[in-house]
Image (cartoon, rainbow, N blue to C red):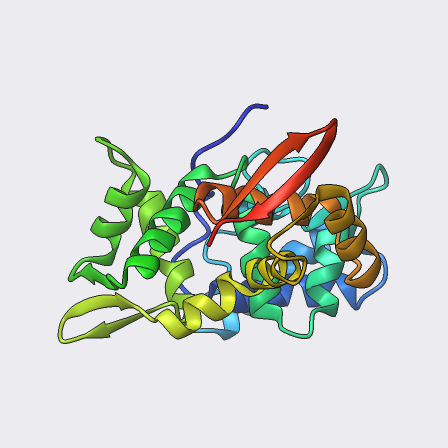
Amino acid sequence: MKTYKSIPRIGRQEFLRGLNLLVQMVGLKNEVTESNLREFMKQENDVSETQPFKDIEEWLKFSFDDRNTSIEILHRDDDGIVTLTEDGKKLLDAERFEQEAFRLLVRKSRTNFTYFHKTIKALDDKVQSGKYGLGPDLDAEVNTLMVEGGSNTITAGTISGILKSFDLVDKVDDEYQIDPAVYTNLRDDDATLIKEIIREEESEMPYATLEDRVVVKFQWELSRLEGVISDLETQNKVRVYNRGGRKYIQLLT
């Protein structure tokens, strides 16, 4: 599967507000066209000092499901009508918009903008080791975390803005730090649930049983479970293996 590294240049301010505005605009109105959407975004920029849609073209690139580096929340049909994708509908209906948005970003960034995913994995390591410091220059630190031996300052700045929008980082005594409580709340809920289910089965269970439980009881899509398991495997929290022709999952820590 082809992957893409960078996030479109959606700006550095009010990411969550912009995302929420888009979802509300398309989800709560009928017969929205791309022209309607552009006019709406322009009006929001005109009435806001911070301009949530500073670059409208880049926001559209980041939102439509026919673009490579997208969060894939909007779909445009053959008649030019814009609707929410299933992921967009989940955002619209979410009880906790911030958490759903963060989960979506992490999931889509595995292929569509991998620099964000690399940044989150690096932050995972920092939180797990209790090292919350990110230095005085957040953009520079993000650039270091996401690019090995290279530089992409524009994407680093965009990711910094997204982290700030989620209140994941604070500035304390001229140094940026991860807020571990906010980070854990956004990042670990799914993982904690999966670990608790496995722990209830004496830390080992058939993978198919886990799939059935989260799909039926919690109404997850299998892709969501696969993403959580992938993260837990990377963190050496679980092990997936075959025994007697059957797939199992074991909790390691």
